[in-house]
Image 1 (cartoon, rainbow, N blue to C red):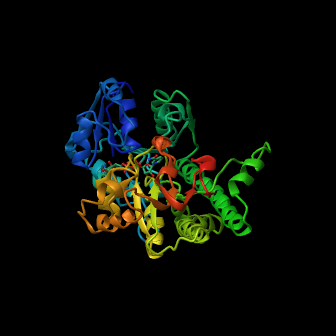
Image 2 (tube, protein in one colour; image 1 turned 60 degrees about the vertical axis):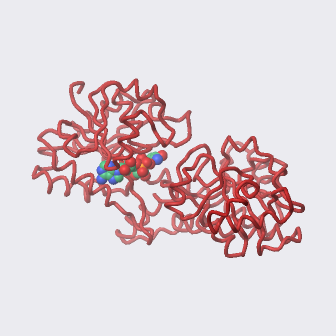
Image 3 (cartoon, rainbow, N blue to C red; image 1 turned 30 degrees about the vertical axis):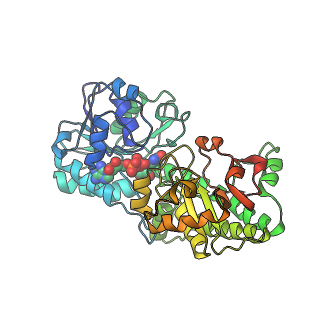
Length: 443
Ligand SMILES: NC(=O)c1ccc[n+]([C@@H]2O[C@H](COP(=O)([O-])OP(=O)(O)OC[C@H]3O[C@@H](n4cnc5c(N)ncnc54)[C@H](O)[C@@H]3O)[C@@H](O)[C@H]2O)c1
């Protein structure tokens, strides 16, 4: 195994940590279709904020490439490309098939291809292997072998990282499975769990995220019920958690590329086998309702304080899909923003972790440079959004918001005193319990 070269295809949140870890021990090639990404990695910079300069230096056998034929010397290919959903919430496995087609071009007798991307059970063997066979002209389980090893890392989490989370492994033959398991066991200190088949390994990943989605959906449903009853959900959960077997989930927006996406992969494959999941689909339904619920609640809070929604100035703190992480994929904040705009509010968003240009490119709006946007930006009048912001000057010299939504609990927000930003009768709606009793309402 030691002499074999590993190629990692796709160097995002999953692929880069793998490449860096394998690159400490084995000749490793990191390939990505995104030339900008390769350029930054060659300069030992990771815009996902996961890897440090030291991590790059430790990976002394790793080299990065953008040229397709750069991967031709590998014997083990690990594919970690995105698996999103389309606008109809159907799995989009095009990147997986493109990566398979690329690997197929260079596949040699005895090579192994391992898939790490999250997908539905059966996808690897039913969808990807045929592409490998077609492009390579080789025969599956005779000339080349396949494995599936789902990734369990948690972006922004410095404790649960690649090497200290047990890794599920699997292979298309007992010998391939053993070889794949040994490969991962050589870098994962927490150990590996060899699943009996590729399908089992695929299903394991899918249900981990579906379970989490459903648990959060239950909390969100409780938040909807308790809002009607005038009960603070967080107070209820705090009390309930004193029971030993009460699961400590909390309500919230479910964004990102995993929890809010992967259940649709399971729904898709179940439906194609004639079963239409109810619980999984309802979990998705409830979680997708939350942006509208949150916006409505904000408007109700304003009304209670005699502030009309029309032209109310709202600041949203946080746009990334989770705390302390720059990832903006499938963020639900743009939906909250849109709902508030539909009510006639002016909405400003501040998030020091998110890339402003990416937010503009993907979601089409400008973000603030500081939470006290209007004070600083009002004079510039560079865009229509900024011009709108001048309305926030209405209280005179000092900028004041009518409402603040704490949407993401970034550590850096600890330095913000929301009351300093708030106008008379303004309200703080804290989705994360971040501001404690400083907030007027919690989710
Ligand atoms: N991010 C996580 O925490 C996490 C955790 C577990 C599983 N996953 C799963 O892992 C997979 C990858 O997720 P990610 O977060 O690393 O995505 P990402 O978007 O951060 O990175 C994917 C990379 O793949 C590259 N890419 C796209 N198509 C390619 C192709 N055909 N060939 C080569 N490179 C290509 C992209 O340029 C990008 O750099 C997904 O299936 C995701 O669901 C992600």
